[in-house]
Image (cartoon, rainbow, N blue to C red; front, side, top):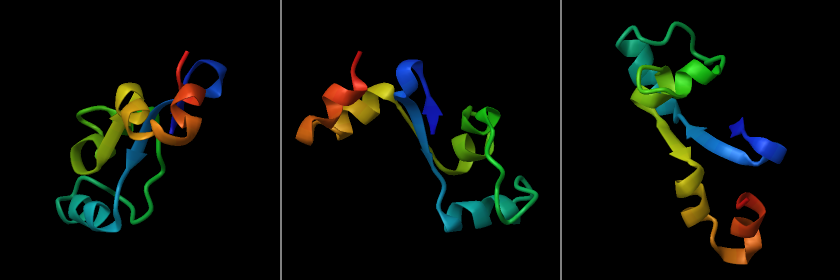
Length: 74
């Protein structure tokens, strides 16, 4: 998770075990347990290539119910 101003989520990343294994098999990932850095969230990074990165707008559209979107909005 990348936090923005006032510690609100700007991006959340998701990498499944299967996706991590694909990255290992392709020689892209070097360890079975990834150590996450911001560069992994970009298009050329591990999670950007093999997983899924949700940006702020996607998070707001997903979390509309229960007042959670108000928590994330400015």
